[in-house]
Image: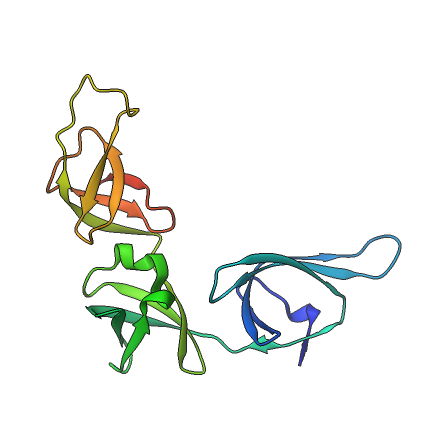
Length: 186
């Protein structure tokens, strides 16, 4: 058992049989009363975010989470197959665990997968990826009803908003956290 002094950003806690990732923490020592730790926790499975406060020195249960590099191989029905870059073992990850990362996955792409006792918890994508525009309407220069953007479909099938000058076949950089267009890539 660990204590609240061991809480750090990125640590995974086991609370009531569920895994929670520490997003933020703050040790607070008020002038009057006992010290405490204020935390912001994100549920590993559902993504729900909650605030929780612990008294200083309270016992907590820290889970061992192993983050390893994997290469995305292919989609197999409702699941995705990844290969460990160190020992070439393949694992199958459900679509629910992959989540929104599926919108940006290309074959042979490097990702990090967090594992707890061999079970995949979540997939961490790089901050941005380069994708090719497979379909977009031609942008009309005088059309400003949509603030200078239009929708475009990238090679994974995901739809993003791009500026009017972006054409079909253009490679663009996309933010994997928000799905926003970041710029063209030569």
